[in-house]
Image 1 (cartoon, rainbow, N blue to C red):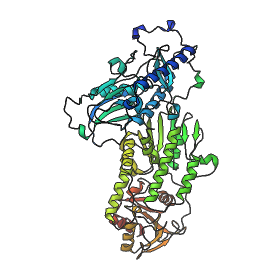
Image 2: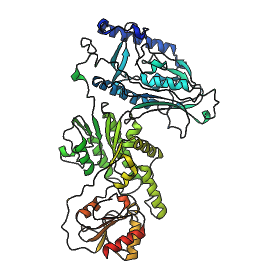
Image 3: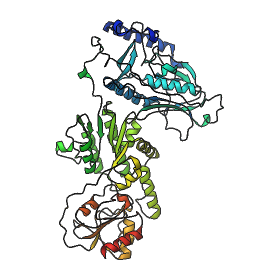
Image 4: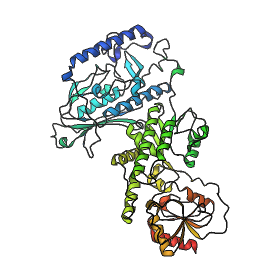
Length: 598
């Protein structure tokens, strides 16, 4: 954070040239450190007296970013500087502190003339709130301190505030200028809770945009509606400087001065690298990918360690991880709630999203800050993004369905084709959730999936896996005569298309699940429950679905040698024995069936 004199508690006034060389440096003592703490509390009391209750800056409200809001100013700074191995833990800690502080500032609305105070908006950095050890500059040393590194955020705020034409009410410069930092350009603002503050007043109504991507912190001032027409003298729109914040200044973790009481032995330090796998529903393809990619420094977050416990459906291979974290109580609550949900409807979909959010938040709270790369199940992705857990990290996504925006657009097309369906338009997710997933998928490094339709959407980001073909569940008897529909009767599974085909070709159908489109849906069609004979009596398995995430029964059919006709939405391109047709194309299904049953 800030460079402070251990004895006075005030900012040191030395110039960079005045810093003692290594041989002359006097090691700080515990007595000096205790005295510094006492002095700091005195200065905090002075701050409180200088800010009487009626004149203190107020806590401002956060809102979703205004769509299309014009950026008035933007400041960029690199998240990772020194590449020294000994510094990686504190670098990761600094990024974690920025990650936590960002939650309090992103979306903050600052009315014109309102006094912004950094320490009114951001609480005191404590471990309870998620802050960790980061780099703090104090009396010539870069020490490890909870909340260390927040000066990078205050620097960027000050830099953007200057560009946006804000009136600077309080700002303190660093007394030591590290190479490549904002301080080297005179665009810095040091902070120390809570008496060394950054305060300013914007000239127009604005909103803060504070985000972390893989390598960079972005701080921007965005104009609200009233500010969009501000005159040129009131708002400067010149871009801020893009600063490389890297430096080679060592900290207590790498200075080599082991006699100093602040120097911790190496075993006390946290791991500096590792990937965290945040998984949910088990797919054999994704599990094989995990086994091939995970290393001994990685962490596994799974709802339940089913392989070790011998229960549950979460059969992720947990062997060889540095740590395995579970969410047993959430699994129990999810199971209890799921059994009480209707088989179809908006309430069911909302409940699943709420359960996904609860699991994502549970994972985020336990996520080690040293995990600089994540592999995330898609169901958790938008919630982790909104929590800020993905900021400052690279991440890959285990894709288990279409992106929500594409999924709902597909449902809209199907609902227009079959407006009589009670299920195709019964639920749409919150647009804010769709936007969060869109942003997260755009920031992801790779989309990992065996589903060919999803892989096509991913483009260059796709990591296409092969489908896992199960062992055949039967020995093929003489070919059956019925058409098997291997799922519940739902509009999104192509039930309307298959009904039209069955009537035109006078087909006999075997149904693989309950009828959820209405009790009389199959009137006029010879359709009976399969009762275990779905593949045994099938001439062909047909699924002209608009949406199909896990075509497991189609894979079983292909493995057993039963011909399959599936829409392109099933994602089975290249699987032997599968004929692909366009979703919603009744005529194509008729032609494919005519060839298959001839």
